[in-house]
Image (tube, rainbow, N blue to C red; front, side):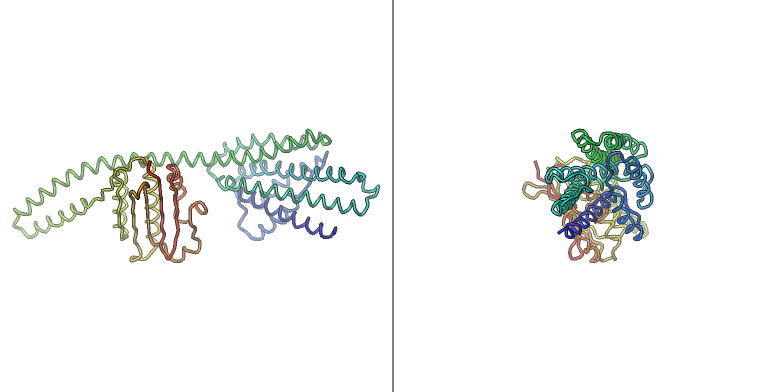
Length: 429
């Protein structure tokens, strides 16, 4: 029985190590070297499973130095990020290890009445109970970190290098509180669980709160940058719209003038030049009217780019009467969608370069569909929606999904039979 419990304890310890290493890896990526990655798990097992007992200053300080050495050797990133990783994860694993060990020990002595000193003699039943309580504490520790991984995974993955050194410094200052609390409470006040347990718990949640804070700061920076970029695009499209109206008026008059000249000219060379100018005017006036001024400009620019890259671009869009979508979101949905399609088409051979855009009202919904060939080799990593893989087809699908969800809509994307299909469905108010 004891052997089985020891084996189960070893499995639980290694499972906990892997989960914890994955959490740190999500915040601060491991180096690519396979040997270093294996060593990170092996040494991480020794470091992250350490239990610091009362009055053990050497253990507390040694674990802190070990954590710094661990991220320095095995993880990528700059030192502000590595320092934040240490200050976030060190108090958490020290506090959890201490709590699980101490609670398990107290429950064992309370349940069995065994003497505190092993040398005074434990019965065989008490030894089995001791091992069972230890295994149970490891199980609860693993369950806690699995729950933490499930809760924090999205936030850990959102923390990127967008944060400046000053922002990392702010997070570090906040993390000094739980770090100091762990040192103080475990070293100076070890005997009173009424005081120790709440402070350990607050240190753990402070660590998790700082993960959320770093994620929030990173996402805020990206959102602010993206909003500024969209604002510039909107101003650009409005300027282009005004210029297009003026140029179309000039071209309309030019077409009439060319018709007059064509009837009056007698020179074959002049007639040839007039015919060439008429073709250019007709090509310019081959303008897609979608019922939305911003979308008109977007489609025209993408159509011109498609002609340049020899991409067959077909448009069937009617947004007449659909005016609840803001111009910035029109730019996000259609601009990013067509950019992704153009980018994918350029990687294909000439006959495969085909893009289809459909948009309009379907009953009480605004329906958008963008299709392009994606190549058979891209189907291995296909996903049904962007929620599972926000960037598996170019860049910007995540922002398109956010724009659709802003109006209560949804975005789906899939690549099947060599065709990538993007669909957006938004309810019309």
